[in-house]
Length: 79
Image 1 (spheres, rainbow, N blue to C red):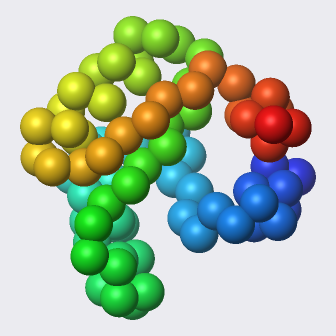
Image 2 (cartoon, one colour):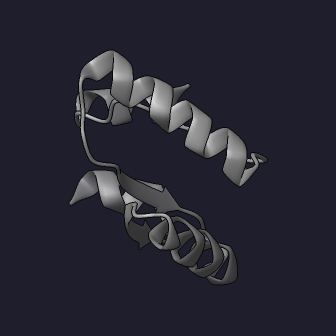
């Protein structure tokens, strides 16, 4: 809950926690973007497993989503 509160304070609109399938991510993003009137996906993936970050980044990039990855959410919110 604390992560969600801090993320909201930093302007993050949507958080999706694991485990989650790529189809679910795409569905949630599409609904969220339609609700907000957003035209392009921009996703920040935070995971301490570099292989998972690389996999998600490459998969989402293939379908036109701009992706950034970070290994640690606590450091991200401090920057």
